[in-house]
Amino acid sequence: MRIAVLGAGAIGAYAGAALHRGGADVHLVARNENLRAIRENGVRVLSPRGDFTARPHVTDDPTEIGPVDTVILGLKAQQYAGCGPLLRPLLGPATSVVAAQNGIPWWYFHGVGGPFAGRRIESVDPGGAVSRTIPVERAIGCVVYAATEIAAPGVIQHIEGTRFSIGEPDGSDSARCRDLAAAMEAGGLKCPVERDLREDIWVKLMGNIVFNPLSALTRSTMVQICRDRSTRELARTMMNETLQVAAELGVRTSISVERRLAGAERAGDHRTSTLHDLERGRPMELDVILSAVVELADMTGVPVPTLRAIDATAGLLNQRVSEPSTPAPSLVAGS
Image (cartoon, rainbow, N blue to C red; front, top):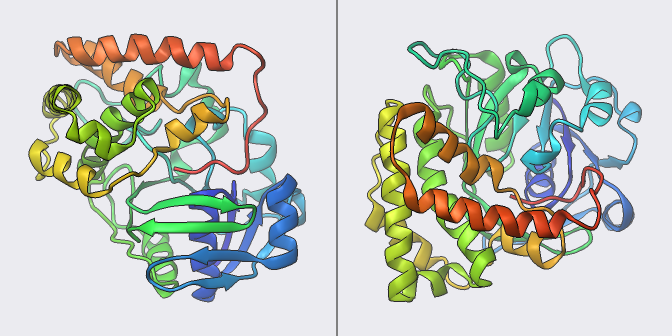
């Protein structure tokens, strides 16, 4: 299987290294120090499951790679609309695109019935820009449960988790999902193919919608937020509002709020990707995580006063971070 990873950051490089270890024909698209380090030393993965080094092909020019079977996007969701020049050289007639993103994906209402069939979520797909760059027919959904960080250029610290749940937006059983799952599993990753990925999306979102913005607003780790009585109660309220929106869209999760909080507390002093972005002066991935749920609440008529307040304050912080300049798409973004 021929796979390109566009954005060889914390998640992209980890997945690419595992796929290469499993025998897939992997090509990484990276730049700057990350590109130089991987060219010289490969991708070094430091993991409690065992360290390893993989040496896939790496370049900053996707035209060197050409069309592949699957593209894995390791970019931040806010960079999808502008990634066309990097993505197009990798696309053949049947190339699928796997978005290893947090939050609500641009394809969320694709392939579903009911009153919201075909609706566009403006926070996620402003003016349809993402759908024009990545047609929904190419999309394979992906929910990442692995926690990774960039320890140094070309060096990925794997903290916990190896699960990458995937699925077709319309819930169909496809050969392209089965083939990708087999390649991921050959590399030592868990890759269940879900008939309805939307429950996974909301389970993951229960944590992201709380800890990503709160970690940025308070400069705190997940365990610090969980162990402070006031912020733990705030987190509980935010999760409950989130689940009310999910229920109005026909999704009921199998994980309770208390179980989700306990899992976050066990993560210890993990710093979210949003906090890392804030500290580096980069725009934060909040539209798909928080603003999208507020927009969905407006669609469904669910009152979400706490989410709305956090969205307003975190949104203003994000504007301040973005004021000096608008950066080009980063190829070293994590999840």
